Amino acid sequence: MHKHTIHALGALALAFSGHALAAAWQPSKPVEFVVPAGTGGGADQMARFIQGMVAKHQLSPQPIVVVNKSGGAGAEGFLDVKGDKGNPHKLVITLSNLYTTPLATGVPFNWRDLTPVSMMALDQFVLWVNEDSPYKTAGDYFKAVKSQPSGTFKMGGTGSKQEDQIITVMLEKAAGKKIIYVPFKGGGDVAVQLVGKHVDATVNNPIEAESHWRAGKLRPLCVFDDKPMPYTEKVTAKQSWQDLPTCASQGIPVSYVMLRGIFMAPGVTPEQKAFYAGMLDKLRQLPEWKDFMAKGAFRQEALQGEAYFDWLARNEQLHRTLMKDAGFLAQ
Image (cartoon, rainbow, N blue to C red; front, side, top):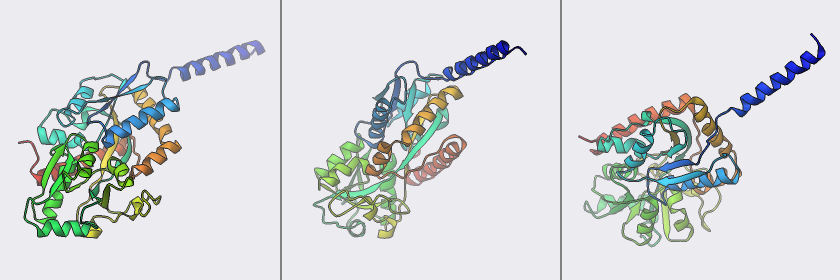
């Protein structure tokens, strides 16, 4: 073959491969990032952090715009994304209302209606009291709940028949006493209510109450997980997240962790999903992400593809059992 022809073919091959690379899908307009919860809560904080990191590190050619759609215990947000079939410019961040809202209300939505993209982390729950509370340990608090008449203690939480109330019912069952559950709009609100002593305790996520703990207003008693958190850096002068015992070790046999995951609308293409999966993979490598994980004391677990799908199916079944036990299933 003539040398010029070889050069020409080589150039052509390069042009084609360059074209193929250039043709990889990317968003062509701003991406709406739906938070099916109120402002200030754990999901909202993570969504806004992701928004900021994507902009700072130019992980997307288009900006991400966070929109809170908390109506109907998050049903507003989920139904919005479910109804936007094939729209690749929309993401949604999840919390346990991914399961609890359809199970409790019968709203026509299931996580399989969306496109799972990536598990970002698992969020913890901590039993919190006001710093002025007489209860210095989780064991002290639990003994008091068991010894006082039903309805003596008030527990603040986000929403009704969602994760905070599920944990409260688990506590009630373990104590054999009724706890008055007081619902608020979001996790940020819940922490403020405990600072103001309007409730006796909360089961907030670490990130929702961390600033109040640091400021000496709230006291964490235990973590609802089967092992202590790995974060050793001191949050206050005396304590780190790792210093918190598990609730089970304090005589409270309750364990619960929550998904922080990203989904897209149904009917998107594999290429569109791959762009966001890649974007989130890059984000997870950032030092700022590792700092965010430590500040919020997250359990660092990341899943994609089939492993993520299987985890979601198992967790749905767990929630169905918990909700049934609590009497929260829609009739």
